[in-house]
Image 1 (cartoon, one colour):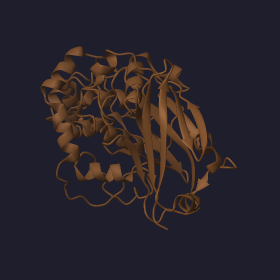
Image 2 (cartoon, one colour):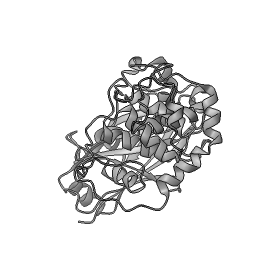
Image 3 (cartoon, one colour):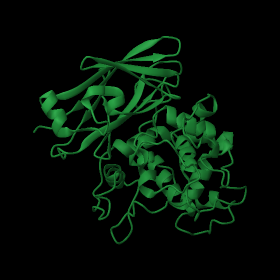
Length: 361
């Protein structure tokens, strides 16, 4: 897949345009009236899709569909980023790309990105508007759009993906950075062990990734989860529980705990089968004392993919997970509180709190 040439002057232009504040306003501002899309109800990214539709950042097709499992083209991505940033369309700035037809519906969007320095095309004279956006391209585009690519290029951020050798050299630092700050939380609806960076990104995955990226708008300092993580700090960045095959991502409550609130009516037979924990890159292990047992799980490059038995021992005797009904009966339908100690290889430690609030019986 073609490289996205980089013009470092574009970073300065993007910052000067105030793109970060525009992005934040686009995501969290007043909602616009929009007809519901008929085919997003079963998508794991339904909430994110509907939110960005309401904000006017994305739109469905004329027949009222969105096609969550369809691929996203580079022209469509140009429209999304232009709408999210509030950039003015500029058809004249797309003139250097011979494959962007003057007067086409996307020429103004491509020109806007070129003028802002978000894209320099797939070559000096091409943009490849009809080509599908790959996962690695999407990552790089979004980091540029929220003005965080400079952080990635100035640091050394490792990604733990088993197929990281497939990541293009021009996107390696950006993907490592995106991973370490938690941008991939929930991406594809399941914990990731392989990124498949050259794979065409699905529309639902693109929206989920864009939605997460917009949370970083205007946040160029390390800090609490939801911002780029502090280099050298030791902390949990994100936590996801897998229940009944679905991902439930924890929210940081501001008091040091990650909280997962389960919806009412969740299937009592649905089983909690595991967790994906993301921590600082130097995290080595997490030790948890639960029901009289002490268990330690290891992190690899800041990530731990663990089963319930790995973490909670006797609660999962058969090693196939624990149902919501069993959890409720054991815990009195209150909450599962997991308190542990995160440690790095040098012995530095910090406390971790993960809470799963159970729905009432």
